[in-house]
Image (cartoon, rainbow over all chains, first blue to last red):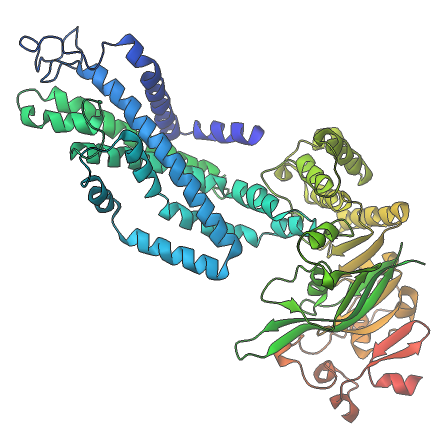
Length: 280
Length: 324
């Protein structure tokens, strides 16, 4: 499709967009093929000789207290982080778009009810809500963690989509489609949703960074991804007692978090400029 | 002559804050025969666009068409339709063209896809068949190199081309009636003439009826069979076009003609109509043109009805009594 190609061209047209998108592409590739090339992230090499070993040719990022390869664990952590973020954001975007379309299209009491509920949900800090739920059970499976993050992330998206729909509904081309006898489903999905896709895509991209940070924070508190599954937040938690003697155990996952969140924000920014018709 | 549209005492109302209702369209009646062009002429705010939206029941909420109004398409009572039945007549019986071709097309789809959408909304045809028809429609509205334009996005086309695409979309469901709401207002003068010519050709080749909504008497002259002049939600004069131009009878119509410069004839000073069109909240009782009318007299404090002033020529003015 020409429009998508044009958007991609613009995304890669700015240094920010190029840097962010290249890094994310590299990270995805690394998460997919990296684990095949690197040592097993669960393997304990030598608990006596190789615990907290500094970076070397064999272990470029060093090893942790259990003599596991930090590079392998950072790469496996990327897999977990990206998977959690992708699935949770997909869920949030779907829920947010659905609620926003319904509220914006039907308006009136439906809109008022949904938006007041969203206002209420937005008043509760997301992290506290998640802490409250996650602290109760002994162990939270990864899928449940993803579902929880996904279902608490759509409130702002629904407002965004609703606002777009309110604007688009008054556009002449929507009236023209109605006058042509287009069905309600067609108007909602083809004329409203597709035209709201730009801001939605930007929100989704920025959402990926948020979720990665949130998941890392929860894992750092021991409430997110459970050991021994490698996760960046969990690795920093493990590194805490040895931060002074073996800083590499915590620094590398920290750098991974920073760069990834930075890259998603760069891409989100570049996308929002590329998709804004006023900037073109 | 086959009657394709009958509008009878159409009233469109909006609620106000104090609970009463305003009637921006207040008792409009007209009819359209097959192959005929009727021009609905009036200034902004006279209710002409709302009248056209009411034909397809597209009056924006909280507005509504009041009970007692009648809209008949052939033998279909439009006001009795709901849901799917209503959707089926939109586009299929009446096609619409809007004023601004820059905003009437969906920016994210190709024009071919948008024309095909109209075809597939009303006919059970395959995607490739719909595309074929879209191509033929683009040819019919005079777009050069139509097969290449089929995959163009709206922003790649000029205003005149976009309006042709809009006409092609309106034709996609093969309607009996085409409503053109100020189809040329947003276009250059030279392009205006081309678009009007396309509309006229289509009317003749397809036998469609055209309802041409405009504020421009110049457009009306060569194109319309009959003219209805609207003022403040009502039709104030209706006549065959030559008759109206030869003998404008309502003081408002006369005022409109007096404010248009003429190329032929002696040079004379233009006489504008005093004041502006009042909004519906400020419509006076009696004749609504009275405060601006140079010929108003006592009787004008009572509302005049539409009275004949000649064959097929009527006006809403007390002066009609004297002349007949």
